[in-house]
Length: 272
DNA sequence: AGGTTCGCCTGCGGGC
DNA sequence: TGCCCGCAGGCGAACC
Image (cartoon, rainbow, N blue to C red; front, side):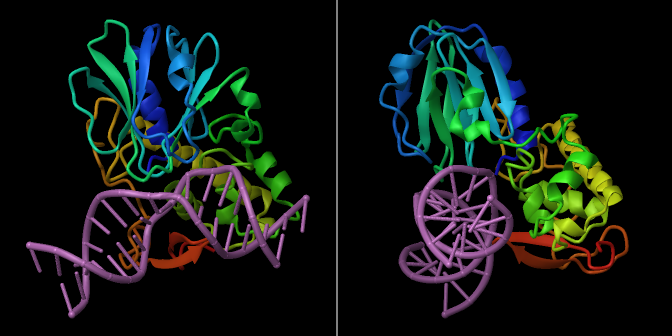
């Protein structure tokens, strides 16, 4: 599952190949994604070129002259640059073909939780983006912000930091990791965090995301880069996927619980 | 309105 | 070997 660092890695990876390249056509083989791909996608893209590739949370924004292609990789999505001759495989749903190019941009997504949407006008006003919280790596996501918006909220801290309306793009893996590093139990009511704990949590969220981006988006088993290379898969995860194994800090066996139906791994000794 | 659960999907691993 | 089952989960929609 691509998390924010993986999406950022993809963004950086495709930039050199897509910027200023004129799009000849789009080939859509399967339009049933999270939302159906518009039948006019090809018409919208034809003759345009990508001016800029931005990211908002886990959404990629390919900005063109007449609008923006909004892409989400969902659980199993990939966005790769592949040679023009490469035949599409089973779950290769969309190809974006450049005029006279020797390669194309291919969207693949076995589970089809992802999305490929055309947006006319300002993409930030699009309903999927308009209500997103601040970027986790941005300055506006800070201790004061987390403290302020958590007051009076009766929700678990893990659910809170995974709420995209609070902060955009913190997924399950990094929520687990950040809470461990912050020494905060995932099932704490967010309202019970003091300002110091908010500070600690904000800084660990930023730290784990930055470290993963610097490592090239490597934490996921099935992640592939824009070049189609698998991630380096360094062992950087301290709690996620390590239930039953010893805590790297104190040696206590890590426990698992379900929070909002998502796997939550923590150290009962280090996280309070 | 805040909080919780649902549903969309396929691949994979384990049990038999 | 092959089938069945459960699990994985981002996130908007629907529900309470």
